[in-house]
Length: 205
Image 1 (cartoon, rainbow, N blue to C red):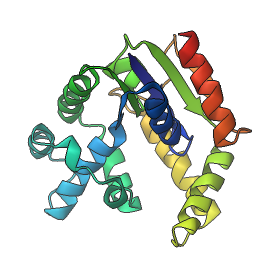
Image 2 (image 1 turned 135 degrees about the vertical axis):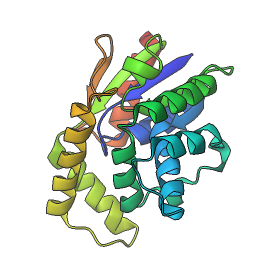
Image 3 (image 1 turned 90 degrees about the vertical axis):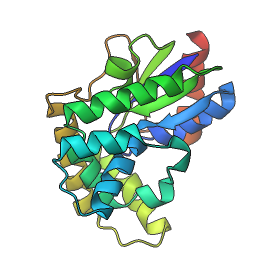
């Protein structure tokens, strides 16, 4: 069973994906981390983010087991990842990696921006998880403050809007809801309500 979960940043899809994977006994991959891992490697080596050949080489040798979300979650790496995500050759390399991960038994939950449309259009079930920009900005701000980081709601909101535009307007694999994906708007939902709704959708599929 392969569950594809797409949606914008801070929509709750990551938390939902991890909980669904545990609930259904599947493996989980946050595909955004694969882009962040490549971006982090480029930044660490002081290499230009537009160097597609080097990006593809890094992706080719990427070890999914070594990706540390706590290290890769920084704002700087997130911005860099969003910028390199437009590189066609890099996307092709990472999509193949993500597909190989998904196809190992017993299956997997993949979350990202283009899982249901590009990475795995034949997924068992597809969800498009979203929420208003304001709700997502509030969640992200609260999350950052809880981690002891400085956070300004207005700045976070503007940042999310910029990322939404970049992700949805890019020419290669833009973020969009697949035609057969079920829309799950979590604007007015807490995590438990959203999780139960997602379980019901997957169970019906």
